[in-house]
Amino acid sequence: MKLFFEYLKAHIRAILLFVVFCGVSAVIFSLYGLPAAAVGYSGAVCGFILAVFAVIDFCAFRKKHILMEHLRSEIYFTLDDLPAADSLTEKDYDELIRILFEEKQRLENSMNDKYAEMNGYYTLWVHQVKTPIAAMRLILQGSSTEESRLLSEDLQRIEQYVEMALCYPRLDGGGSDFLIKHYDLDGIIKQAVKKFSTRFIGRKTSLIYEPVNMKVLTDEKWLLFVIEQVISNALKYTKGGSIEIYAEEPKTLCIKDTGIGIAPEDLPRIFEKGFTGQCGRADKSASGIGLYLCRRICGKLGHTISAESEIGKGTTIKIGLYEGEAVIE
Image (cartoon, rainbow, N blue to C red; front, side, top):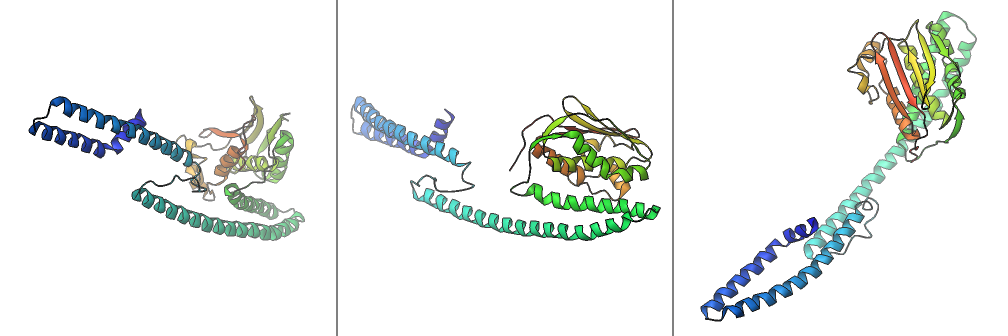
């Protein structure tokens, strides 16, 4: 019914013109003294003919409307099925659409080329910078002084930033290197804990961890990145306290620290891109990218991530690993 009223609205001028013609005919017939029945009969015949043509035209109008609705999801890719124009005005619109479509395609190709070039540069830069990082790591392994320990911690942060720089463009790329299958969650957790073992010791932070004995459907490399980011944040804001790693039902990994906590007004925004909050502004080195990437990765893996916190008592990050649907592009 709504489509029918839209059709009437589009042809309101023709309808008004028909009514005016009928009125003019009626006036002329009455001036010549013709019977009113002749006027009515003439109007009825014209109205019937108009109704027949209106039904045929409405069917064509409805068919074109349905086709255009179907094309809304395809017009981003092709204009091959665009319906033929029935008038000069429609031809003008058709030509305008084609010009805009071609310009859009040109801009998309240009942006894709620039993105591919930028992504290639980031990838090359990451692989190049990893070489001196590995060399510095080997040099520091031969020293056991307090200075070398602090340098090792800073070098580990640099490695994290390098991984974030590589992760960022990969998430926005057209493809992914996800390898989705069932993994032992304890194996992934132990890799992350081992990586930060020296920082646990250096910051005098105790680890409370009992094997969770859980199999999860995920990608090992990307989930490891998420867990490492969460543990890194927990260590950054927890000194002399503890970090507890445990599981909740249904299939939820919890990483709880006894650090400084997050302000209530900041908590809803900690997964936003670039948001650092009060703690980040006090730390100065926070980028506001780590947890944002964690949320993006969890979304693509079909996982969830959330946070609970209280100022002065600590923060708990919960990663829901129940088997959702991974978003693989």
